Structure formats: C-alpha cells, structure tokens
Image (cartoon, rainbow, N blue to C red; front, side, top):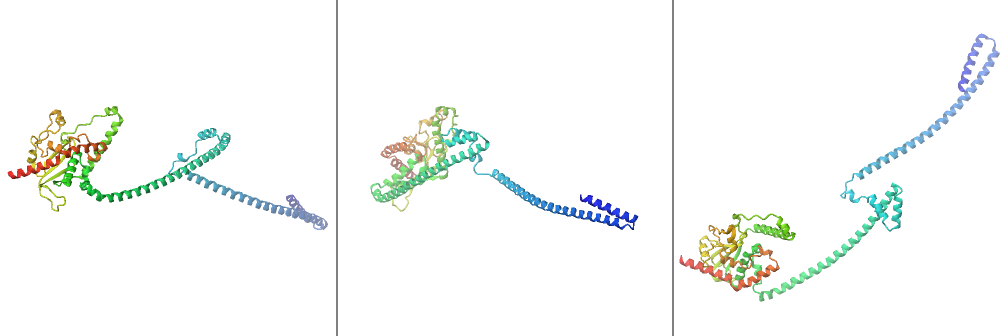
Length: 442
C-alpha cells in the first residue's frame, strides 16, 4: 500500500509540474493538486509509521527467538558434553584391567538366572521371573536383583566363616599357650633330673659325646662308631673313634637315598602291574662297585689297654684303622692309615686275609666269577663285617637316620648279642696285640 501511495504521489508531482509549465497562471488547479499531494503525503507517513512499528515488533520477536535458540543451543552443547563424558567413562570402565577376571565377577547368565528364579520357593523370585519374560529391560532388572540377593547371602556366609576362623584361631592360641607352659615344665623337669641321671646312668652323655655327623653314617659304620665310643666312655677302653670325609657329599647322598626310598614307596603303592611295566633298573658299572660312602670311621687303638676319660694328655696311638662302606656291595672295608700296617690286618684272624668274599651273595656277581680286587689296600675282612653287625643289619636301610621303630628294635636286639660277645673289646685287643707283636719282631 505504501508503494502505491508513493507511486500516486510521484504521478501527482509530475502532473503539477506539467500543468504549471502548460498553464503558468492557473494557480487554483495547482493548489488543488497540492492539497491532494499533502493528503497522499500524510497517507505515506502513516504507512511508514505502521511499517516502523512492524519492524520494531519483528526485532523484538527476533530477539526473543534468538534467546530461545541460544538457550536450546547451550542445552544441546551440555547434552553433547555429558554424552562425551559418559562414553569416556564407559570406555574406561570396559578397558579397566582388574586382578579378578571379568568372568569371575560378571552377572549370572540369563538362562541360569531364569532357571534359578523359576525353581525358587520365594514368591518374590517367582514374580521377578514372570516380569523378566516381558522385556529385555525387566530381564536385566531381574538379573541385577537376583545377583544382589545371591551376593548378600555369600557375604553373610563369608562373615560366618570369618567368625568361625577367629574362634578356631583363639582355640589354637590357647592350646599353644598350654603347650608352651608344658614345654617350660618339661624343661624344668629335665634340668632337675640331670643330677639323678648322671648318678644312675654314667653313659647318659654318650649320645652328646658322639659326632653330630654320625646320623649321616651308613648303618654298619654307625654301629662301629657308636660301639667304639660307648666302649671308651663306659669301660675306658684304650681306643677312640672319629668321623672323616665330606659332610656336604654325605648330606647330598642322604637326600638321594631319601628320594629313592620315596620313589620305591610310591612304586609299591602303584601295584605289581605298574612295576612290571617299568623298565628294569640298569646294573651298576664295575667301577661303581668300589665307590665308598663319603664318610668313613677312623679308630685309633692306643698302646695302653685302659685310658681314663678325664686324662688331659692324649695317649699314644699304636695303630689307626679306617673303616669304609661300599653301598653297591653292602660290605665294610678296612685299611690302615699307615699303609705299612696293612699286613697286621691280614694276619689279625686266621683264615681271614681279606681276599675272599665275606658274603656268599657277592660271589654270585658277574656270573659267579666276581672277586674283590686284590690291588686295593682296603679289604672286606670277615671280622670287619662281624664288628659292623652285618649279621643283624643286612636288610636295614643304608642310613642309620632312616631306621624306623621296628628296625630300631631289631638293631637293639642285635646289639644285645653284640655286647655279650664283646666284639669291640675282642677286635681292639687283637689289633693292639698284633701291632705290639709286629713291632717287637722288627
């Protein structure tokens, strides 16, 4: 409408100019057209004013729309930021490496959960089962609730077990205190009984006087060593015994023997069929037959037949004899520390020069042709086997430390006959007499 008013006003102006040029003296018509022009001008101003109002209203509406848009944009940015944050946290949780595997702490599988809910006697569990079948969301809710219930029950059970553990620890502590008190009382009793034991049993300290490595000795050498020490302590016999050799090798040997014994026990439990299926053990090589135990027993025979245990000076030794044990042959060999004295051993007992085999079973080796090497200084004299108690220890474990209660009883029974026969006194006296006689002839 304003454009039409402007167009009419331009036409009127052009008409006034044209009329004034054509009729310069006709002023009335010009005034009439000027009045129409003023009316049109007022109409233009009115239209312009209305348009200005409309522009202001549009600006205000635009301002309001812009504020709403900015608010919506800010809300969108906040939502995008929250989405990014949650996605980051979810990724962090999924990539977290725990000490406990995910399978160990994961929810119960859906099938197992539904089966557990269906078989439960609780009405709430049956309601959860019915709801869980309606949608995936309800299924997840049911799984979470059921898992929570199960874990609460496990926590309660764990608390009960912890309480039971504390009760048991308390009982164990009380019993330990009782044992400690009892141990102190036993120690007091043992200390108070020492004077009486010293009076009643003069050889009570015999075990304490023996070398600590005696437990590593083979059983035959242990018999020789213990009986020589006992004879010196109890009867003041003019002799002494000592242990020589590598203790480390002896300990390694003892560990190997213990491992073989354990393997044999396991094989015995597995049955005869399992044993038959295993390949037979290879026979030891001939050079291994003469391999001696790492430890040996040295017996010094003094010139005096009786020596006081309280003597401050070491008596002079007439002869030193070394006893060794060959595990492969299970015999005791003897030689003198001084090689020139070996002739004394060969003539110690008639018919026993060490060239024969002391045990008939050894003669069956190598197809019945085995003979002990005559080139070796140490020889398996029969009197040495007699002194070592081979007659009552041939089937016992190689090491004295492996003797069980029945085997110890067998050794004690054999030692009773051993002492009645005075084997140590006989051999010691024979050695002393033979050495003194040999020295007198030289």
